[in-house]
Image 1 (cartoon, one colour):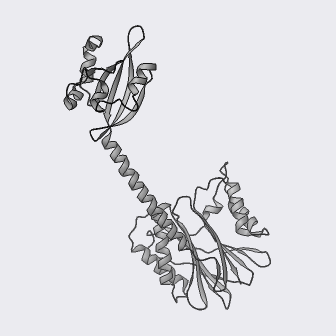
Image 2: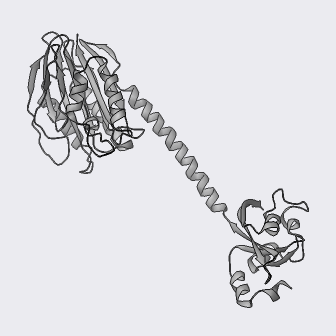
Image 3: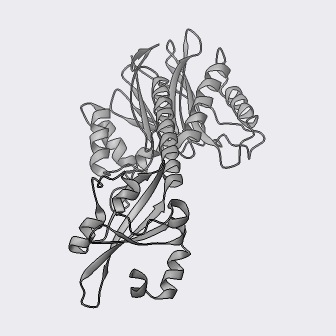
Length: 360
């Protein structure tokens, strides 16, 4: 008998298991089944192993047969009485190291499989939603080409499917055009939702409004009404361009990437101004308003720190000097910049965006 070959204490341990355990000999006869297996299936000892589950026919893939043949430890999934089991087959050897039996352990993994299925479905649904939001975010970017005295082009990349970097160009009135770039702290869904907030708020607040400080105060007030946590904030550089006078007035709300002006003569100017980011740690905000006269052929570059802070394998950042060198270089500036960035840092870890507006 099989029991005589196994210590009684070992059988007590096996009988206490919630998994099914059975022992099968080389003739496919069940020599032993533990207590749990007998409770659920009845006394199956003496029966052929495949008679218990396979309605008299052999399994398509019998792991016990392989175990008995070469001593390999194998596993497979099996569907039994509308439940899913992970079955593991291991060899039992005698004192002469000969394989005499196979011990099979059946672990019910139905709940785990169902949980995995639900998680997979939720992940697929979330992925679909994120892809939809990603497409919507891209569609909200201003169209490339001519726009009210400006010729627009840009690069826009995100480290995740959704970005916290965003820019926009919008009409204030017949003469004036609003231009901004913002960088929301963080990545993903939360950051992307805030970019939508900035876009809709600025377009509404700035409609017919030429006072930059007033626009920013109202944006700050609207942001405070969201009652978000202190770690949610964003920086923004906002300018207004007049297509008749070519005056460009601007303010900087904590945006640490100073826009770069490349004049038609090849001269570089950084547009700096002081101001705090839009955050709920400030009750009142006031910004330094500056202005500059632009000329036909001038190119204005608004960008986020994902470009200048992109690091190579040695941890050295790309930096503003490399960016300026690319801007001054002849040829397609944005194409050259993308090639340079991709070559400098093989995997971008941050979102980045750059908007080029040429005066025409």
